[in-house]
Amino acid sequence: PVGADTSIHAPLYPRFLATLYRMTNLQLPAVRHLQLALDVLALVLVWIAVRRQWRRRVACIAGLIWAGYLPLIYYSAELFSEGLVVFFISLALFLWSFLPTARRTRAALFVAVGVSLGLAAISHPLSLLFGLAVVALGPLLLPQPPNRRQHLIGSAWLALGLAIPIAPVSWHNSRLAGGFVLIQDRAGLNLYIGNNADADGTPNIPPGPDYQRLLDWPASEGIKGSRDAQKFYRKQALHFAGTHPIQQLGLLVRKFTLTWNAQEISSGSDLPVLQLYTRFMRLPFLPRFGWLAPLAILGIWLRRRERQARIWVLLPLVYTAALTLFVTCGRYRLPMMPGLILLAALALDALADAWSNQDLHTWRLA
Image (cartoon, helix red, strand yellow):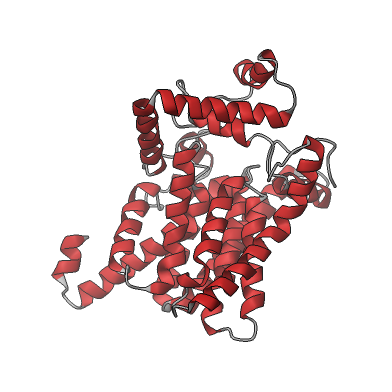
């Protein structure tokens, strides 16, 4: 159940995968099918959440986009943690949709949302920033604005829920490391990989000799222990930002634009090549990021006054900030897809209404 060393990756997905292996007697095709089933369950949760907050047409548009979105189909069947993160974020959004009408169960729902976001964080730490943003803003994201006391109480319940899955992981890692380690042991290294003179904004150092030399670098400088090694990497990243501010700014801009790039930047097997393996994935009109993202931006503008859309908007905004700070690729941006898909569905719904009402202004804006 727990290892003898600190986790170099978020610990939940390896244990989830081990559970699937045990359930299926190490049958990899069965594991892939179970992970795809989890993605379908996430789709259903988001459909219900959208249906509760908007009309059926918006939910159906969102469901159709999700069902045909190639990266979700592909990555959900691969042995990556992002499919699990998407599920827990979808679960949090599903639970959130019950909050506007909840009275007696509101505190329990806040805690449940926090737990879901905490589970996402211990599946992949980048999602922790979204959890912290939800805790900070809390009830302000609900359709009915709370007073200050309600805001503080709601945020406290959210923070409690967020801490429940993370606290045992932090305790275990910190006990072994001899110092505080929140979720995984290589946060400083990951920050350095995305912010140094040779960085290109992507996880461009695959396992191999170059990666091993990077791991051995602190020891060659006389630094011992994983805790001090992570401090060393963070110090190197900050030193680069301080001594090369223009290059650092350009790198941040590059990571931002790569995050919103139409192409699926790979961090492993190349998605366009793997599309050739199935007839369905070769279909030419399946949803792609290249048209989903502009529709989502249009949805943000057209529905900017709808308070119930705020948490859905917050998801891609916070994830973009996280990827801009660390590293980015097509797989890492996958957890913000529930928000982008809903916003794209809202845009298409608004365009359909504009067509019916002969609203040329909305179409010119589009």
